[in-house]
Length: 477
Image (cartoon, rainbow, N blue to C red; front, side, top):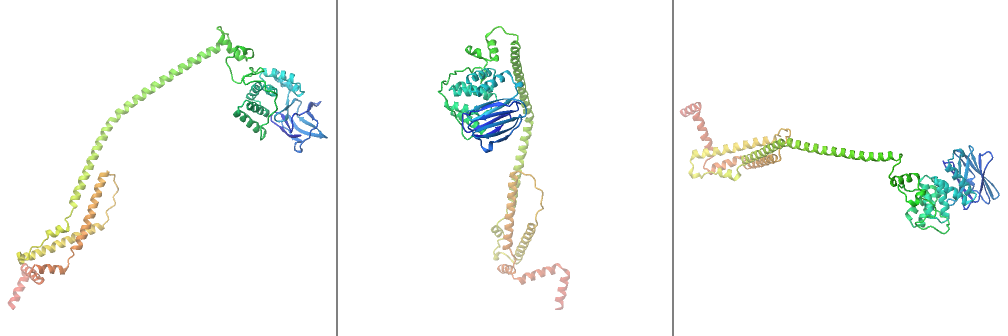
């Protein structure tokens, strides 16, 4: 059953089948413009009867007759081809190429693939090995598949890894490496290559092929693989010197022989010049480093010299700040002492009225007048303070002051508020009432009428006109 047909950008056609092995025959048309594949006892899915091509491949179409299929691959130019079946993807890969553009190693590769298609395994293996000696990666890939089917897993993985490192991207490569690592119990590597196979094909599983007895241990390779270097080597062992590359042989002669060839002398000179250049560069960097350290040290010394007078100025400023703070404290203390007012009890004690039996009439009158004047003056002061308190202070721009001076100002403000409360309290207690004055006058033995009479007499004595009028009035009487 032919399930699917794909064409990639490298002019390769993949024909995917349901079963393996796949028995087919292929040939090129007389005009070399068509590749024809014939399969017996085979069917085709309806979705895989026609595929449009690209590049050299024009299209692929399938003709079915009874139980046989004829697949036509139409070309846009005259080319050669090879068709090989792949076991893991169960597919036939058809590759096109131009005979005139083949290198000797590619020519040997294509002859080996033609023998592989005709199931001449011995000839195919010999030709593919010959191409691999010339570092042909595709030859190493197909040779690795043959070694794997023979149970030579170490030789196979070496060839397959070389093919991978040199650009071969056929999906069967990853499936084969994954199966070999699984046989070696290297499960992480097996899983890695299984995922690569699935990403290339879209399969949800990693297929495996049936193998003959595994005839290679973990360290033995029955086939020559030293010509396929997976890791670059400078020195090779004497036993493998025959299979080493030309580059490895050159390095061996350099280390063994004391006489140097003319081709090797320039390389040695270059190496010596590289060492000398490295030493000169290191000395230059050391001189630059020492210069930068010396320069940094000088800059620090200059900065220290320039910072000393600044420190003195800062200390003098700090002293001035302390003095201003102390002055602010003294001013606040003086303001606090000035603002302290005698209590109401002290005022009452100062205004204690003497006993009535020790005071005569004139003294009593003067005492009353003094009390009235004191009360009036206190009331006047109270009203003036209240008016001053009602007036909002002018808003002045804020100046930057120290924290101690601000505390002192807050203390002054608190004392001003206390003074205001005392004044309000005094205003309540020293309300002048006529009844209270009369009561005070009676306690001193003075009446209101006598006080008024006394005051009227004094006014008459001071005013001559009133005195004259009073005399005239007594004369008439």
